[in-house]
Length: 279
Image (cartoon, rainbow, N blue to C red; front, side, top):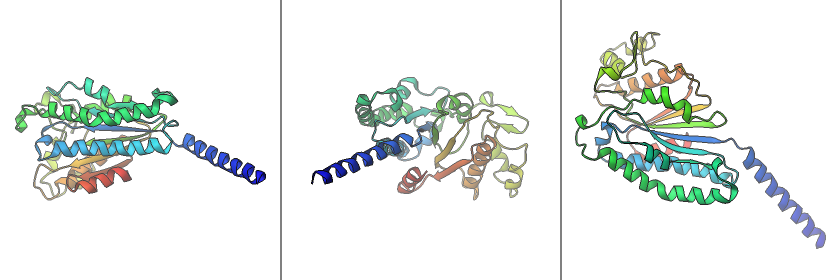
């Protein structure tokens, strides 16, 4: 019996060490959620959908952390807001919507993860209430500058040692109220005017593939980055509007060497949630 206990104890210890080693060798992941707080928030129940989807992204992040027994996790999660003239002051929210497991010692990790999880819905409620307060029509919202985020901020949000996953909650448009915020290089711009040019053109796919057409690609190295575009919602009733939107994004991301890309249209919430969990 004593020999059996020794072998059993050795087997359990070996099994535990194998699990810990596997958790430690798992790749580190960095989850970034980019918010478009433009007039898309006027869509019925959009703010609630956004908040639900952000929490779904966090739930996936939490699952990754727990697979590593928490103590072995060096993963990171953050919510950021796309630049917006006249938009909300984002610094306080973004500070509260960021957690890096690498910053905590073994004793702190579980407590910090649970505290962040409990606080997340409250911060999101405040953020969206602030973003929509007193704004009842499209003219009350400024366009968000997603291109500027990619150009000025994304390179600082990605972590070179991690697998980076960017979830973008947007209708898919790059719109502004004034041309003074728009960059231009030949036919290429940083806003959605390419959509206006090609929307009613039956030959739009061929023209979009032209080297002189589309969004200006950002000349930065984003390393191991995958992009998941959520809540794409055409503003116009044109038959191919959604296809055109996605094609513009696909060309832009591909030209920036971001080859892992998927999208989910505004529609069934369970379908969008599934996209998050399989991305």
